[in-house]
Length: 120
Image 1 (cartoon, helix red, strand yellow):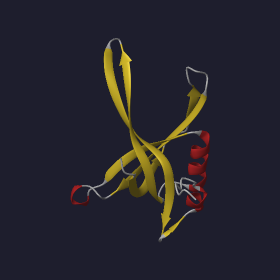
Image 2 (spheres, rainbow, N blue to C red):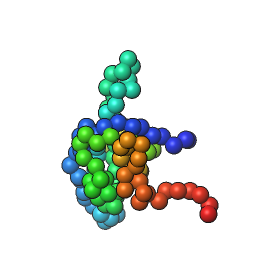
Image 3 (tube, rainbow, N blue to C red):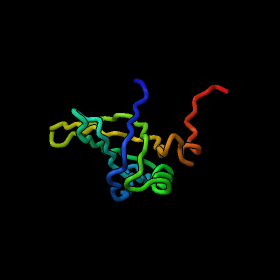
Image 4 (spheres, one colour):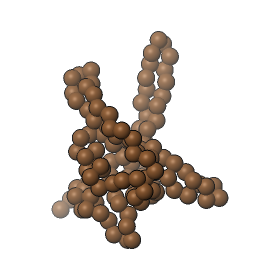
């Protein structure tokens, strides 16, 4: 699958959530919503992304706020959940890189990102 990216303005930053998994591992996640006017006839579209991990959440909150224009690189993830013999599916947009977009330049956060996959 090719890399998925969207550009839009941060509309909402939801509260950070944390907990402990069944295996006893601590987790942190934060969701945020971006919007753009790339919908049918220029209508507003909204997308809710999730960030997992303390480092990603901290970097996001340090460099972003409501109203900033960002480019989000993400994966689409689907989870299966079965309860009482019924199976449900939940799809989420898992953000793994967020760039601030400002007049053709990228933020400090993009300079920190180390997802470069060059072999040298």
